[in-house]
Image 1 (cartoon, rainbow, N blue to C red):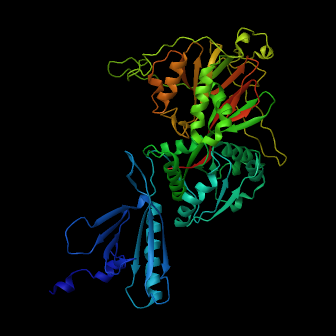
Image 2 (cartoon, one colour):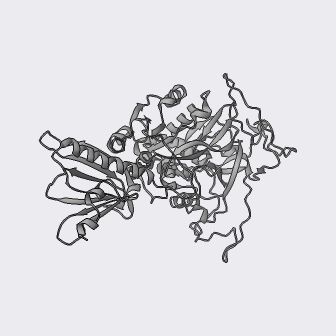
Image 3 (cartoon, rainbow, N blue to C red):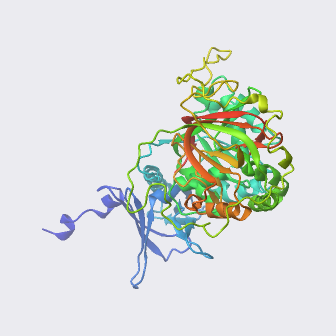
Length: 560
């Protein structure tokens, strides 16, 4: 039988028969350079057609592709059409070690016929096939149940032009805007004009016209958005709107956490922005826990990141004056606060997570760090307190002494509050783990014996800032509040060493006796020092008794 008759028809392969799409095209800039291009369900393979030996084959994973577009030739004399695919694979950095996502563009000219329309249709067919295949190949973590942003996706992007060093808008136009165009993601850009602008906007917005809300700022703007959504009468539907984060502020804790959850190598600055932009274009959505926070004034807030009192809150709030220098403001604030290290008096209680005991592994008992101590060479004794509050350390009869409600009630049961109806009859979210702030905590709670603290930090993401890996094992939907507190007696060098170790997530291996870490479901804090600051998601709130509980998977987060 004739060989040509028995072999596959090349034209049928080019039309996609047999599962793989195949074609031969020329380089967009040089007609003399030809490529054979094949598309499978997981990769686009480009092979240069030439007789000379060497590396002429490139395999581009569709998991790294954000989009593909087809277009006509630049002028009427060009009968060819073009399709361009956009990839953001991990590649070695130019100036430093490690890898990061970097933009790769592949453009091909289609000139199979002398008919411009037929060539354009072929280019569009390839572009559509690449787009469809790349959607199915979005990077996914094992064990995580994802949904997807509806396509085509309509995104509202809120930008705070004053966040960080005041460059959020420039960062958006320089790094994100083009990526969204490549991914064919239509968006509405909103520039916030004043504090709580975003909160007011999302509280009244018609969310049926929006498939996702994306914040290009620091963490404070997302705090506004979440609380605006939870203040709506239709909060149950509104809080299901997928939320995205693009780092444009100083701390960028959630952006760093989302990047970490994607199991990508560490990234900072523009590399972190590119990573978050890539995840936005891929459009995978996962659950995110929120924490309900109650203040003494009966105000309730919703938090996605942290609740801090003492050293962390002081640094966060007081370093605002250094905002113009960017993320280094936190280092400056840390050094200033270390120079006048304060000790705060208060009462702390929490509802612990009941975990099954783990058997010891190897030769190490469960409580023994399995890594060398990073602060073993540093003293952990107290340096004399230079705080202006020092004279009030033992004054437990101060203004807050009559609020001593952190005592165990005799009733083990946790009373469930009645739902608070909205004007349309819908119920508000119930905090079933929390008694009233004027009531004792249930007996199932743990009361912390110490009353002198350097800091208390409750965090529900992995990172407290871009360079502070606070909870290495945390996930956005683990259903946990990760509670840290440092008791009085720690020295300045030891405290500094803890935060330096936190850059690599190694602070828990320090073996510092003043650092305590607990996984909890709820907590209550009652400051007794007459002066101090409490920060929720980096925003200063009313100083006084405060309590909080976790609500697993309440919100939805664009992630990887």
